[in-house]
Length: 263
Image (cartoon, rainbow, N blue to C red; front, side, top):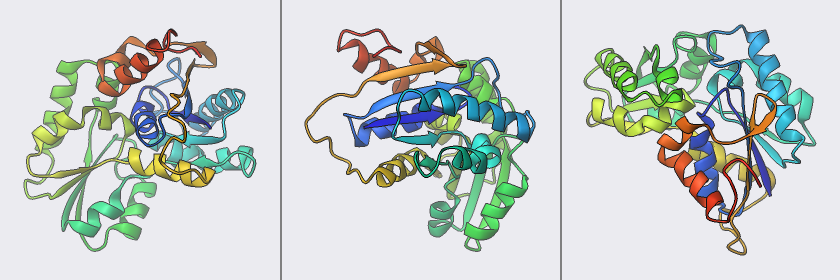
């Protein structure tokens, strides 16, 4: 079983870690676009083109399902990706976890990139899944870039700024960018008492459902890891190793006598 993940940068680590947690034997192909990131400020057409290029690179590795582990790419490129690859290759998008958050809390904040905050896409999700909850959209300028660069000081400043815009009575914070899940502990500390809702576990589970696979490795085998950076085989970037999700992937590969990023 071979699973491809697409993102502009290391935000895909959260979904990759979730897949490995559910199926340790899954072979992973991580296809990102460091030469073109961030995708957030780019036009919809440019994001779509870049997401398609990453997806084609992953598909060439013989993946069985493709996870679009990026909210921006899901917003702009999911229809084009599905048109290009389905039904032969299932494509799973990433949607902010507004529905489960609003189902259990009456006050919810959605932390997202400035480009996503206030977008027709996010407003549509709020209208469809908001369940009557009081929902506050919180833009987080610079947070995704800070996470991508593993810049702890910049992460702290961006989280502090977003927390200041978050109503003190919120019961839940929806992480509307996959990068944010890598610093969930920092966000939790800045919004005490709020339950964080990410998308990685749900996306991983959906990918396995599309494959008709269960969540238990049948033979204890540990999966391989391939890394593709802007169309070329590479290794996990140093910033990825600063997070437990990336370090665990690298350790698992190294433990089998391979260099991270190779099979």
